[in-house]
Image 1 (cartoon, helix red, strand yellow):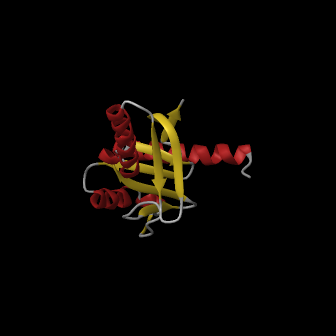
Image 2 (cartoon, rainbow, N blue to C red):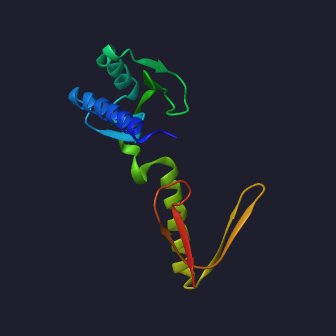
Image 3 (spheres, rainbow, N blue to C red):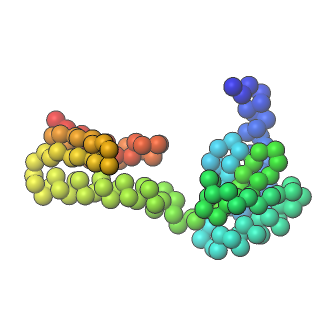
Length: 154
């Protein structure tokens, strides 16, 4: 467990990195965690990453091709900071997973309205089935892992 003092030091370091990026003209930022920050852009992301590498040269940035943070890799700055470049237009409701979930929500509600009665919704995968009976509406409840759609019934 991280001590509170160490937490404050780490938080200050990410704030300093954020300030440095803003001073260099990168104003659309998203703080993802205490050691990861995203630069949001609709410009060519590879070009933006190359400019970031040049712009942050004094921090000895290293480009990583690892795709666990972004499909195009990320920039690592010692000791453990990562900068990723994400498409600005694909944030929030436009993000790939979220837009699919919102489409499911919309489809369920359209079907309920057409039927004018509660319905049974069944989610199936190859090995599992999840059944929700007597559903009167599907609502969005937030964007934390696995909690985008809530099915309500009487």
